[in-house]
Each structure stands twice: as C-alpha cells, then as structure tokens.
Length: 444
Image 1 (tube, rainbow, N blue to C red):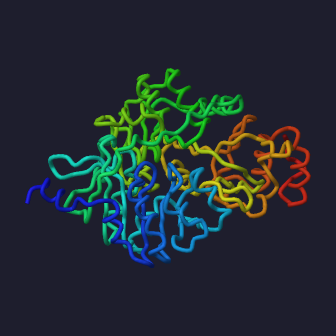
Image 2 (cartoon, rainbow, N blue to C red; image 1 turned 180 degrees about the vertical axis):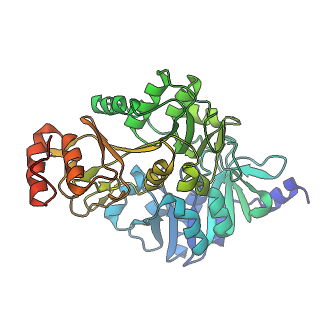
C-alpha cells in the first residue's frame, strides 16, 4: 500500500474521528498552533454523550470549544500545563486545573501516564509519508509516542519546520486523519515596550558578550533585548531557546547570529516552538538555519549547558527578600505556569560563562491605582515559588541587577533592596530587620 493509499484509508470526517473518545478517557491536544480546531469543535458537539473525559493542553491560542461548551465541567475536565490568556479566564469557573511540572520533565511524566487519544494539527503529508508539526513540535512527538490512539488534523497553512529528529509524524503512526478548514495560524500581538522595559533591556545588553547563546522568554522586554541586539555590534551569537520569537528573526537578519561557537547544534537556531507573527512562520518554513526539537532536547539542563555563555532572559511577577521568585501567580490567581524557566536557570548556570536573568519592573499599579512593590519581604499569600532561592541567579529591575547566587540571606536582602523602588526601600529594610536578615553593616 502506498502512503497516499494509506492516507485515504485513514481519512475521515472530524465527527467520525472523535467517536474514538469514550467516557472516562484521557485526551491530549497538542499546544500552541498544534491544537486541532476542527477536532476540538467535533468533540465539543459530543458533550452530552460523554462523562468524565479529561482534556489536557497548554498555551492555547483560542478558547477551546470543548471546554467552553461545558463551563461547569460536567462532561469535560480541563487539565492545563501552562496557561494562556484564554486559559486563565477559565479558573474562576471552577473547570480549570493546573498541572505543576518542569517542562523538561514532560516526556517522563507522559511516559508514565499513557493517554487514550492524542489529537494534533499538522501540515500536509509529503511524498515520504511524513506530516510536519510546524511551529509546535515542542512535545508533539512525545504525545504521539504516549497516545494509544493518534488523530491528526491536516492544515495546508502549516509551515514546514526543519528539525533534528522530532519534527514530524509518519502516516503509519496515525490512526485517523481529518482535513480541517485550513485556517491561518494564530499570531501573537506585538507588545510595545515601555520605558521600564527599555531600561531593563539596556542593563542586560551590558551582560551579553560576543559568542553568547541566547534564550529569550515571552513579552515586551525580551523582545526589546532582541531588537537592541539586532542594532548592536555583537558578533557570532547562538540561539538555544524554548520559544522562537520575532526578535530572533531580527537578530538573524541583522547578521548577529552565526551559531559557530555553540557546543551543540553548531550553526543552528534551535527551538521547541515558535510563536509570533506570520513573518516568523514564513521565516522558519524550510529554513535550514533553524532546527526544532522536542523539549527533551531543548529544555534538559545538561544539554542547554553544552553551549558556552548561555544567556537566559525571563520575567517574573514578584520576588521576596529570600530571593524566592514567583513567575506564575498573583496570589491565589493562576497566571501562567512554571514552563521552562527553572530548566534554563539551571542550564545557564551549568553553562561555562552562562548567566540566568529574571526581570521585572520594580513596581506595579493595581486596579485601585495603588503603587505596590514587586520586591516584597515574603511572597504574597497564595503565590507560587517558581524559582527557589537555591536556583536564583540574577534578578533585574530598572534600578539595577542583583546577583544573589552564593550569597547569604542578609547579602541577598541587601542586593534586592538596592534594586527596589526607592519609595519602598526603608520599609523593606525594616521588614528585613524583623526577619533577622539585615545587618547593621548593610548598605544601600
């Protein structure tokens, strides 16, 4: 049987495909632009026929029809590995449950918890029988291997992302194929940097050397760093990043990236997933300068550390005087997730000459117009410790950079209060003294 014959034999309607799902099943959609919208809609239409179906995904680019159709969770229970803006709005409804995990552990977790049905959006089949995961390969291959049944939804608009080993699925590994509406891929809005973002980015530029290997997180500030790098005279930078963004395109097109000093995947911009503009998706399409890998390659700390001078740049919500970092919740309100932040903090520190930076504005203004410090004596009640103090390295605000690695508790408090907003420094000193982590010899 030819690959085309096998494809036609497995091709069914979305409505027919989701009949594989039974009550009590564990269902996993791929994440990012890998969520299959036609299958999602078809499964939502079966709501009243099913009970106790656990649906899992992460960083969804639109509100899942399956979950939106059942806000009380009577039929579908939503487990999420990392919240997008759409996902976090579900939490108050009571049908959203976060799965805490380090991203690099994801393959092992799934291997120990097999899935009944896996559903993914893929590109068109090539003449070798392969269907590419496009910009959403991060854990797609892992899902295929963990699923008892695998259904793919074909979208001809999916770019072909070259990779190292985990960028596609073969028709022989698939149980059913559906062809969706071939919608354009979802894009991320461009977040404009403010003055504080630019100030932090300026501080970080002083920490980046020629030959550094760059990881940028999501947000306006990391994007600003990429733009500054593009306009700089830095040379021979490399890229090993969980998320490939538009900033990386600018860095590459300006000639800043060669990857020649990387210890692994020399000459390649390697990434787990890509999210951004249509220009970004066009950039990765059949581009041999890029290589997408499974997260077990991208986020495993010792693999990250094979590259010298890893510079990891990520953001946080708040930090306390013990240097415990919260990057995923606002009190009891869930915002995002752990993701790969800890993975890259570990990997950057293990890298020869590497550094891991956690960045945030020194203050924020709440809904009532009250100015509050992001540097606190202790984390807000209900807040999650994303990066423990034992792993924290460099913490950055618009007032400077605090290196807390290897420092005592009183030294950490001193460094952190130095980069707090001046309005809150006296109050923080008083709190530090009450916590017995402030010495009379401390200086600001």
